[in-house]
Image (tube, rainbow, N blue to C red; front, side, top):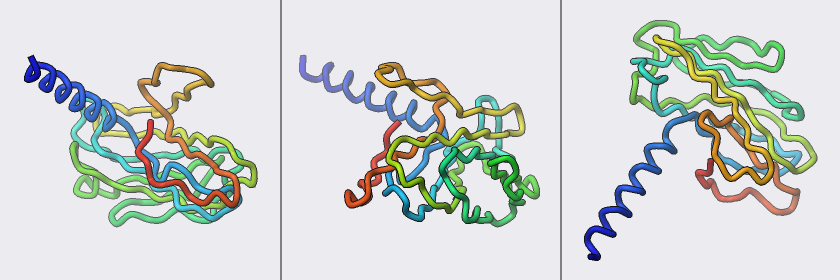
Length: 167
C-alpha cells in the first residue's frame, strides 16, 4: 500500500514542477522598498507549439523607476517606450531554443511603499506568442494560467527575503 502512495506523491510532484516551469519567472521575488534592484526574468521554454523564443517585452509597473535594461548577446534591446522594455533576437541563431533557458535583466529602483508589483510579459515565438499578464486578486485560491511576473516590495529594515520560487 505504501508503494502506490509514494508513486502518486512522486507523480504529483513532477506535475507541479512541470506546471511551475510553464511561464516567465522573476527572481529574486522579494526586495526592500526604495532599494536598487536587478529584476531577472527567466524564460525556460518557447511558446506552446513553437520551436524558439524570438522576442520578450516587459511592461514596467508604476512605481518601478528604470535605471537600465541589460543587453543580451545577439539580441537587440529597444529603449523603453511607454514603460516597456523589449529584447529581439538579432538572428535565428540568437533565438532561444524550445527548452533553452534565457535571462533578461532590468535594473531599477523600487517604490518606497511596500506592496506587490506585477510585470506583464509578452513572449514572442516563431509560432504565436504567450502573454504572461494575469494577476490573482486578494484571496484568490486559483492560480492564473498565464501569470504576470511578480515582485514583493518589502518594508525597509526587513532585508531581502530568500530567493523563493513562488507563483
